[in-house]
Figure 1 (tube, rainbow, N blue to C red):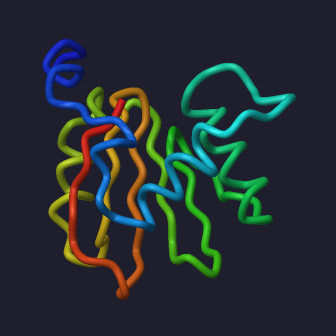
Figure 2: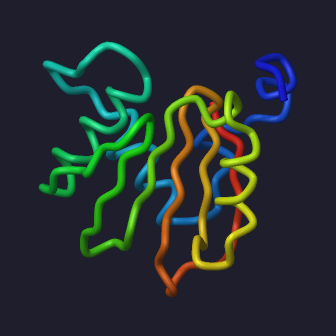
Length: 120
């Protein structure tokens, strides 16, 4: 998928009907904060680490951490490695996937319904 296709399919917070995803989107990923690193992947990961109070384990464009809301996997530029992103989305252990084009987030939390979101 290229950036234009992604943009045309992507939704904003106003189209989210999952309370968990809406909260993650508005309160964590797009909250205003000072000292946020440049880059969408780094900025998102920094915000998530600060919000949940954990340090992510990083390895080659991927970061993972666990907290009370579940297990998180954050991938840098998932569409550059489409096969890896597709594997994560198809894996039944990940209930929610969020595709922001520049980075992707997978969430493992058995209390959530299995859903895939394409977001701006």
